[in-house]
Image (cartoon, rainbow, N blue to C red; front, side):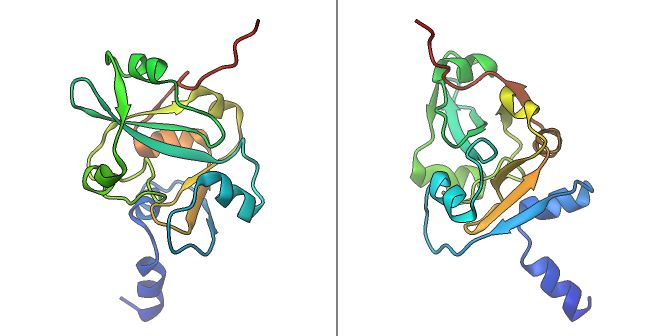
Length: 169
């Protein structure tokens, strides 16, 4: 392997290699980061719209199975809707200390693409209305921009209504 090709692949995350293998186009956004910062701070640093940037949340169901949910960064996961979308009675957020063991990724670098195992994954249905969304790229300092449909294809996800909606009074 040539030195140049080696350098190109060395900086790629597992998620990027999977997208390349599936010939799914994506754009990278990088930023300086030595430790976890939340997605809203990242969007602000990169000048990105909150509506386009999504976070990846990992939960465990009452059956002890793990589930992945991808939602807009300024939204909150509706646990009842999330559980219903995956056929569980309930789901609870995975403890931060368990993220790496379950997903292979670290907090702040967790993405639905290329986890240790293929977990049932749901993307907030409103993502389908966007041309592109931005998700973690598989490590701190790396974001990936791709179509919601390509994210679903790469992660084996389905779209579902999984966030809190404001109640109309």
